[in-house]
Length: 164
Image 1: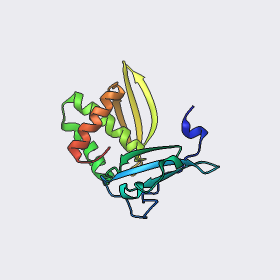
Image 2 (image 1 turned 30 degrees about the vertical axis):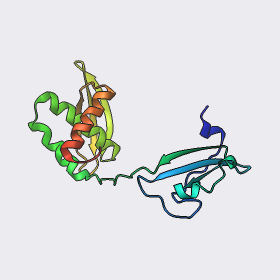
Image 3 (image 1 turned 180 degrees about the vertical axis):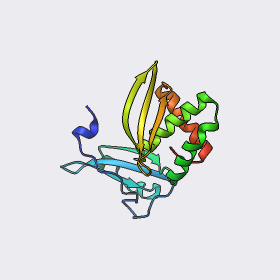
Image 4 (image 1 turned 180 degrees about the horizontal axis):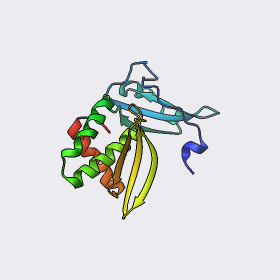
């Protein structure tokens, strides 16, 4: 059983409950949970306001830091599609792996629609419909583990300077 399934806990508001100032990374934050009758309410305080708070008013309390939020990089799907078409110049084993991982990404982005999965001669081939052109695209599955897929995604992300 997960705690969140049994008790409702409010989220932090991103501002100090004492002075109302917005938290900035990597600022220290003091947080406490109190029972307000219907749910556990979370209160966050800056260090100076926490000095004036009675910790006994809280069911539990802790100290943390406001995490830095990294800006999301926008993935240019056209770039991924172009790269997908250009991997033919790679060595066969790398081409198969990159095409497979890129096809999965393009399917997740709804650029490719999976039509069939066929098996013959010990090979698994996925057939996609490319949304923009209605072309059929066949991609051989290299039989990767989840770890190998993640490693390939990381290589592609570095190569294309995007987050897949």
